Length: 482
Ligand code: SAH
Ligand code: F3S
Image (cartoon, rainbow, N blue to C red; front, side):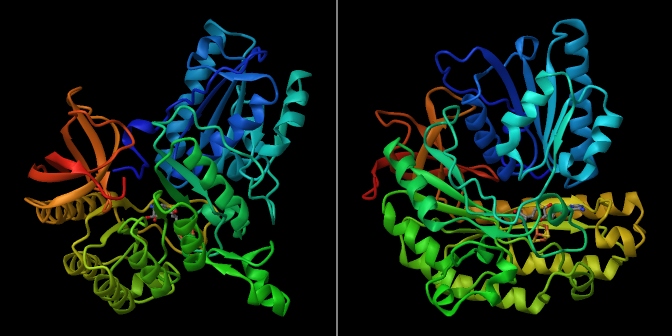
């Protein structure tokens, strides 16, 4: 299973309203995490000021951009394949087309990209998108261009992303960039740089703007949202050096959530991703206090073994994690909890793996994303440890936990049978054009007959049936929060 924001969205190319007067054509597609999809909206916004309208046809594009992911080797291979495709299109139909690589692979491979992939004209790291107009001027003059400088303060807070290609109901709002955690398996701290938080004022303005445009749900995005800290700008790690006044007026994640929930009391709010070592009970209490904050926490643990957690530099134990789960359930009994898990991290024994299994049995996660360990160049694990778990063992362990997770998801889903749940209508069901599809507060997909309801409505649905991951029901009426 690949970690995805939505299986159907991988590689989706972004389409925006055509701005009159723009006469160059941009094809932009994204891979990887939600942050990449959100960044592509920022890039498209910057380029619409440079005369570009989006297109979905590679054959007619003047500029092709691919926003890339480095998290696992497979993600990088997918991008390499896309570059081959662009190459073929350029050769056969569109010789004037220019190709740029954005995101984590650009940052990781830097100039190597220009050497290895002859098709690539432009390489831009995740903190350098504002430099795109200059870089494109270089490319227009026939030179390759690259900017992979990571920044201490770039949050793109001043750019309003364009999101006209979406369902018009749900949107991402990024709140932090980078990550300081240095999990030993993870390439993100190298590709996305040091952690910095975005000005809460600009976050609130964006949420207000989204509400005015008809959006009904936002997801606050960051590699580690609980670590959000605003004290007037600057890196998280420099907070200790901040002035007393800055410290006293600082905004942490619990406070930010509260600000967002109050700014638009009818806007549904989600957030991702939480890190067990940073998620505070203040955050959970804030969730409990505000109806519009959804009852779901994505809380990756990666392993159930204390020894492996330590090798991964995850700064908590299995027992601390279990206590956190207990506390979340005490404060919000119906809170959905989901996981990310890695099997086959170097030195993982059968006993370590059984600890992962037993932790999953303990939590019974609502859903999860599970991966076999993929060694990433430059990470501490790559430098210090042998990738010594055989591929078949990794695959067997993965299959085992995927099956276990399916069992748990089924169990959690069935708890909703005969209940009435609140659902935000997002789109037509994939299976039937007579049905709507939306999600509950716990992030469970729910389908039901359309009747007279419309996209963006918040409705109450009586659950009459379910599959392992989808609820099926009928609307009983509008939610009082509609
Ligand atoms: N905090 C981030 C994590 C990004 S990576 C977030 O916002 O979700 C997403 C998931 O990919 C991680 O939680 C981890 O389970 C998995 N992952 C990261 N590096 C990996 C690697 N080297 N091999 C396999 N899986 C990995
Ligand atoms: Fe990666 Fe760990 Fe940060 S998984 S993104 S280093 S929290």
